[in-house]
Length: 111
Image 1 (cartoon, rainbow, N blue to C red):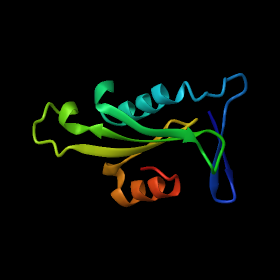
Image 2: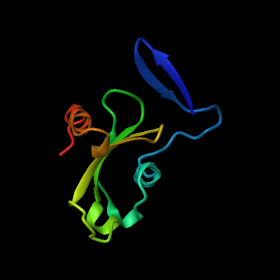
Image 3: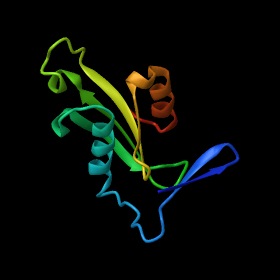
Image 4: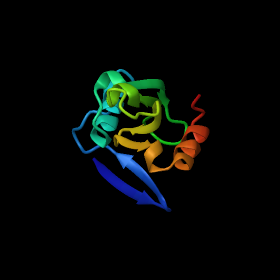
């Protein structure tokens, strides 16, 4: 994956010969991106919304990780929100900053 910086923003571009993801690919790619950030079983990752991005080529995904399931209920608080950008498999979680996730969710009309 090549990253191009244009006027302070990042444009994600697929490498030559690499197929662009389709909507059918998005759920699996989003779950893989979240699973790379935190160790959780795929069954703990719940996609609430996946749609084409209004701001850039690709897709955005909003969801929650069931931390009770992921941690076998030991001291877990419930659910952690996430936001993923496809392509790029860029995942942001509540643990990265609730305000940051709030901003991405609001900008992309999640929930």
